Image 1 (cartoon, rainbow, N blue to C red):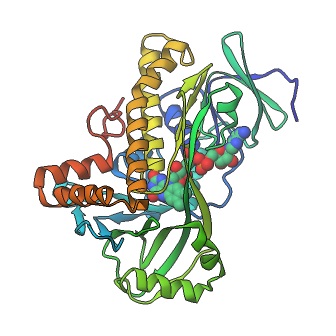
Image 2 (cartoon, helix red, strand yellow):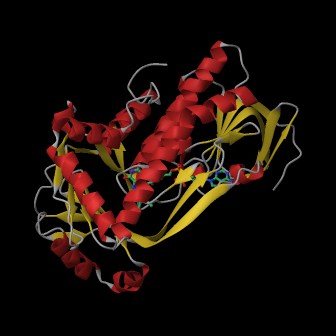
Amino acid sequence: MVSDAEPVDHQIAVVGAGPAGLTAALLLRSQGFDVTLVGPRPAGDPRTTALLTGSVNVLAAAGAWSRAEDHAAPMRTMRIVDATDRLVRSPEAAFQAGEIGLEAFGFNIENDALNRALIETAEAADLPWIEAPVESAETAGGRIVMSAGGKRVSALLAVAADGARSFMREAVGIGTRSWTYPQQALVTIFGHTLSHNDTSTEFHTRSGPFTVVPLQGRRSSLVWVVHPDEAPWLERMTDGELAREIEIRTHRLLGRVTVEATRGLLPLSGMVARKLADERVALVGEAAHRFPPIGAQGLNLGFRDIAGLAEVLVQARDRGADPGSDATLSAYARRRRADVESRTLAVDLLNRSLLSDFVPVSAARGIGLFAATAIGPLRRFVMREGLAPAIGAPRLVRGLPL
Ligand SMILES: Cc1cc2nc3c(=O)[nH]c(=O)nc-3n(C[C@H](O)[C@H](O)[C@H](O)COP(=O)(O)OP(=O)(O)OC[C@H]3O[C@@H](n4cnc5c(N)ncnc54)[C@H](O)[C@@H]3O)c2cc1C
């Protein structure tokens, strides 16, 4: 329903009310910008997210961490186990948060619980919110005008947080580079009789990673990446059969398993936008990039986009500059490009190395993990890089004020 009513003016419209959009809107509002959120309430989401420390800092700055914290479980140890059965295997690598002076690497939370905490924060802050999808968007007279749910909104800047199939990205003609993997991910939540000891374990198998991440209590989330040929077998399994399979694959480290939640089976793909901003639109989260669920990178990278954007916008405001001008958008794209490109490449290379039967690739992975496990300073560097790139990370990610 496109309306011809007079548009309501705001400085910034955040489009998309998933975790990235809700966080962006709250954070920018907390920095004193006049913000409206546009997008339907998030639907049920079977995923869980391992939030690294930098993301917790961003959620705290947005005012939402105190509500999310009660539903999140700390990850104090991260273990990587090579279960590929290949000729050249990587030794097991276990990283302790204490080794780099942290209490925990991060916190695992169900996406539904995270979204609930963000929505409660938005309601407590009286964040203006049009709960409908954007149906049209066009730039005119130094503003971007959008229609949604029979209303019109005009802004100097639109922050596109409307997911991998971003309407806003397409509306301003930003293309993407996309690729697919011969993989699907089974996601579920399960209870277990033994404690997980706050340990997240990633078993690297021939078809992809089998990752178990602690939730609160004796519960964990599973992301099991499989070849599409295995998908029908997984779909047919009863909950009891799936539970037994998890017990075997986790080497019974967690005792007896009971599958709790509905399962999701998701095809895996990668995508990166050819530009991070254009025509008064800045892309954040999955509107800008998407890659397979390895090493807890997706939403964490999205939170770094949001923190980087907030930093650039505050600097622009201090100079009296327009938040949606070409100069401000170029500054945002420069600020984020290296992090987005390097994370996309790193996750893609790791994923492809897991898929490859070519010995030198396995050997390189083996030697790489071995070096990282054995050598102290290198190991600490790998751990820090996995959390967030320390060099040049946005101030809010590092826990510093803007
Ligand atoms: C199996 C799996 C496990 C994962 N685990 C992790 C992890 O441990 N750590 C991590 O960091 N990341 C993880 N990720 C990635 C993470 O889940 C995503 O990066 C994140 O959920 C994306 O959030 P988003 O807000 O950018 O997009 P979305 O969650 O897709 O939200 C987009 C929102 O935009 C809305 N929208 C769409 N079109 C419009 C429109 N026209 N107008 C307005 N609104 C619109 C949608 O309704 C939706 O609410 C995982 C992903 C998968 C698949």
